[in-house]
Length: 259
Ligand code: DGL
Image (tube, rainbow, N blue to C red; front, side):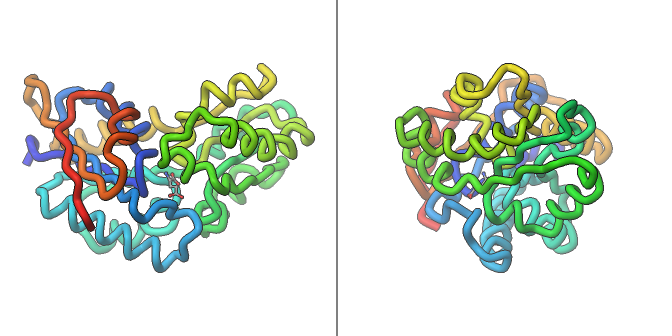
């Protein structure tokens, strides 16, 4: 069981930002990355639709003997992780917007959050915001259109810059000093965002925290792979494998899967 792979899924290529953090911290773990790009974006779908897609992804990864599953998608986590934890017998690691550290550190009492509609409308997000950020201003912005551009290889494009400028303006007008990235596709925007944001605005993303939590849960469940040989890394995608490869890098064997 310890040598079985960790399964990681996302609505597409965004979760590769999480995979990279996990692989850096746990370089001997075998991994399977599943990109459900055909169904991206998840962010505009209903909770019931998101849940069905998460079930399908989970069952695919379990059929490949994954010992643990990382839901490398804020939209999927905030809408489906409780169900997955209740119904499947492996540990699940999720990711949700890092509102808490931003709320604790803000000096201007204003933070921005960029995420999908599905994440911002979820109960889990509302509960977290009420718990940690009820006494500060939280400027929420749906990142409409960002995920499709990234899925289509247009990460660095004039269209992307225009969207980001539009989305950041109301946040900057309200003097935010933290920008929480609430979607795993968004860490790839950090270089562009850093050029657009004043230096006092700190960008917060949860990738490293997810990797640390993954390690802690593997240890707690005696599932850490004791091997020190290079791991087997597999990619499955039902979309554009080239875009996926350009973001995730080398070292993977890949397959196109029409599911
Ligand atoms: N990467 C995703 C997230 O973290 C999903 C975006 C989408 O498919 O809309 O929310």
